[in-house]
Image (tube, rainbow, N blue to C red; front, side, top):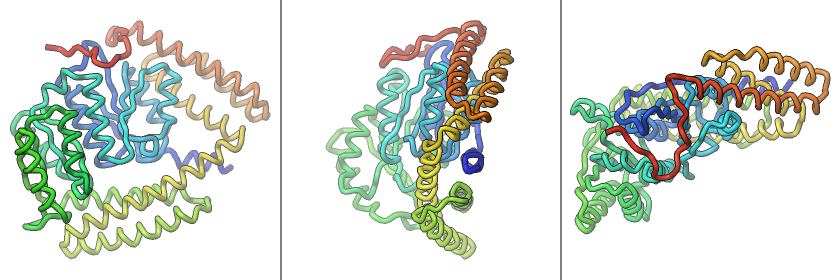
Length: 407
């Protein structure tokens, strides 16, 4: 069946990154950040996760995997913060968490620059006291994210890895100065650092000279402390981006398999050509060209992946049988996540078996009724587990500005 094949393809890989807490947002509060493996959003999530003492769960960009929802449920969060839009982190995750009545906040924008700004706005709204403790704001060129790796290593060496905040800005845009002003004003930052990615003596990206001049002028006129640091483009960073691009191409091809989507096929063909050029440049030692080509290839593969996913969703929505089977697969993994917290899910498992039988017999109305019962049982069981857990006392969902941090 197309449904079985399509849904199997959609299942991505899970990576969970545990961060040592810097400040706990609220006594007893358990925060999980869900983010895609997009390099910019992941950097922002890791940065904010350190500030909030949050656990980070990373999903493959653009792919919904119910195993991710199971892993989040297993952590028994009081709050889940999603970083990135619905293309990067599909809305199915939000629906799963809503079904369990887990509080969800999504911080997102149309691009990585807008997303990082929305994260700062969210921090200011929900965690103002934590934002006030940030020492420096790093404004990274939106065309790259490798600078954060070097910045983090430097800060870890200095002993203050979590006392910085990063944001992405479009260094090459005509309204760069306005972007600077909005980000700095929102973060209320006084110490601003602009990393410039270098390859040898050259800037990796063009347009930095004029940008730096504007930035310094802004710093002088606004009264903030603004400095510039050079970040070297390292060979291992380039290879990492090449591998990421190659994986994204494979994900796009797997999702497209069996579908007729001309735009996606064209983007994959272009991405394969660019990644071949990136590999060739890397082998010749031209890491600047290799990095730019790999980033471009990854972008085209993501366009293909998005187009294929849109077609698959159309297939699911067009068939009651596919849609119900989709729901049952999701609920199975939510049950597994709940079971891993120590809850007896025997009754829920029986209901799932009954729903599957009704679906096989094409009794769609009956299957839907059972599915609603399963959702209610999952929600009630999760709530009961949270209330009885000695490790996670009940926490009122956050309201803007009401967070109290540990001294």
